[in-house]
Length: 125
Length: 262
Image (cartoon, rainbow over all chains, first blue to last red):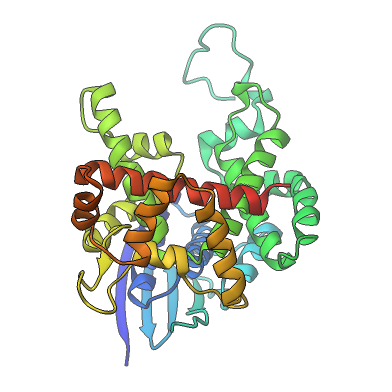
């Protein structure tokens, strides 16, 4: 169930805007409120930045936005060797403030992240 | 040392490059995090000050951290202002905006629409000034918003053209036709009782000149259309639309002042 949206961009900081805007667009479709969307924008930016840290030219960042019910799950993957760098305390703090779930893993050949954002409770009357 | 470019004039050697300048040049995330870490204590004063007014500390921490990051991203040391001064202004601005939005129960389309209106004005101005259509970067600088937000506001402008600030939603004449302005004025907020809300609105309206108050009353409480009001008051529609927009902005500013300032 749910909808999948895939986006592939070069693993460079300046293309993280595409990741952010796609996230915001998908979240808008889920009726996230502005606060949630701003949070999501921050969270995905930080996650992607960790993933592409030190990426060689030509490496790609692959993103999958999975919409299911009231939550959005985003998975990122970047094919570059080495474990992901330790997340800086500032980035960690931002992520824990803005994401419902997040994590980064590496398997020696590629790095991945997973990020979940749920729609905040809204009393629509 | 890089030797590819000969030095121009007698600039400082790159060894002593200001870290803020370096960050603007490289966009290096590690450097950003380091700068944020070094300077984030600027926010403590504001967190203390606003938490005394009952704003949740978690919210204050998040907003001020984001504001410090935004300040690091935009700070230009060549302008001669200390970073702490610049960051304080940014933090205070963000906190006020947060309080304003919380108070006005702004829903997602609202802020994007507001920016959209601003962008239309900025676009016209820049077109004249530059003699060509501005780039997104130029628009963003003009309205002091991020390029992401400009792109989104442009998108919102397309998607929500039918629900601009002062158009009733669902069409005039329907019983439940409510405009975005309605929601701004009489929106709902958790924990914000009806009585208090009405008092706040009443106070604000009380402070308006007679004509403006009447326009707002007809538009948002009687739900008349703009053409109907324009006819009743004997003014042109475009003039009326300017009155409404200006009055809403004015109301919002006064609310921000009374709420966020000492």
